[in-house]
Length: 371
Image (tube, rainbow, N blue to C red; front, side, top):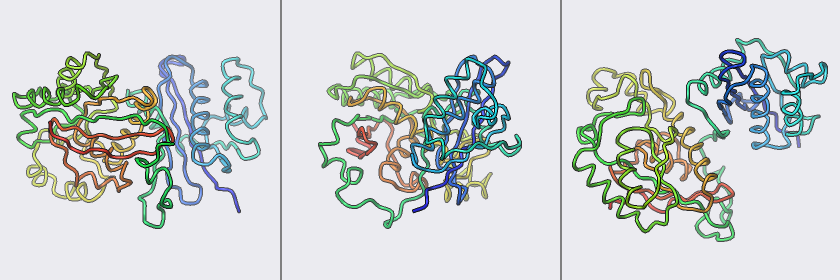
């Protein structure tokens, strides 16, 4: 059997050298060119070279997570890193030596080659670097799976198919996803995204937040996490006070950014942007003008899920978020295509329960529960 071939594209940079720095990396299938994983993270103050090495390391780790026996070509626009990792130049900088050593240990040396490419051929990784520097990291490599088919499904009885019947998987982390309470824009069915702070809860929304707090009072939750939008902070504050917990803000749980559609109803959008709206409603990789695609939100929420589970393994966690993140989580758990999010409708103030097992298996144990 021939080994799988993967391509890693990685980059790093700092604004100042040294200065605020970040790296970005992605993994492609060498045969199809399909992007299988992305990772981007800010690393504080560092040099360009340190950021470049961190990108290589993250990219190789992502490739190993996909297939630890794969043959990998790492494509970089840093001549220095390519020559040093290929063993043709010595690594004299003490800050780079441990990073290079760690990178060499990720995969068998005979399975990895390093290729220099012009910067113009490394734009995807460069965009990830700038995304992280602009405050929108992808902190854990997100594996992007193609839409599942019946032929691709795992055999019945495997852990990921029958998670709730498999106690040997150990205790899951329970994510209690709360959609924020109603706002005037919710009531008017206006698009209210994650690019602006947005409105406060109205009287109905505050009542919904209190009812959600009562519902969750006996949940045993150990943490309350909230999107940074005003409506989610207000909902989370009501819940946190009832449970006697502190509230933590996590930008990853923000709503889809609707760009030019912010504040409009669907009828107004279809009138002003008929072609864009038609494409958006039928394809998950179309973005509102100046906004995010559904695919991007799904990947962002997958990372947020994994981070939350890693932070409080085996514990219940309350996450106060928005409609599209809740929909994205359910669609991912059911292995439905991303566009299926448009067929899900969690009500304001409702609670959706997702269980995340240590091996990555997930299950939906409640959707849109209204207190």
